[in-house]
Image 1 (spheres, rainbow, N blue to C red):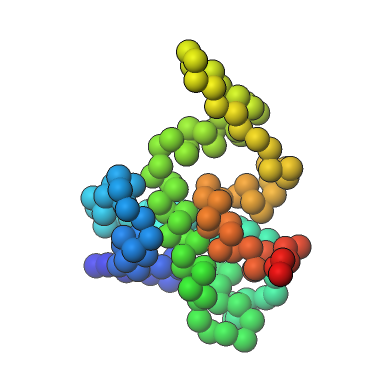
Image 2: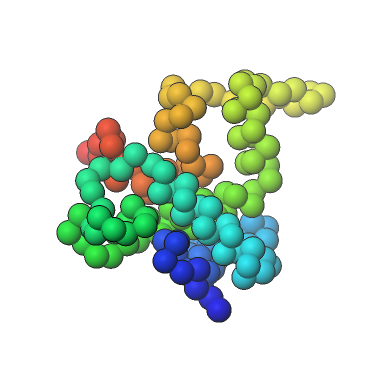
Length: 153
């Protein structure tokens, strides 16, 4: 079965389509090689992370489990689906996960031989909306829904 159920913003087939369409290379190949069960688990986790963002407005239905749909719309916005897929691909990016773990531990730079890598601060606390997600792209997709964020024109 290629559906995750009502506990996710995207199905496995939607995630496959988005990831194959937006990403090329080893991460996309790694995602497509995962089993349906592995993908479902990652999708649920990504959905829960997106769902933890401090969002504007209210749920479409007060009894719904997830935060989306919201307001008057009964649909999940495509940007929320994109953000969920981006968070899925970030969750299998081992290099990103290593860097994230280092940043969470307060490491600001790493030197190996002659190579140095520095981790800049985004100026926000670790518990900010930006730091709930692994993927900066997922955060960018969700920005319009997050409390305190505004579109810059």
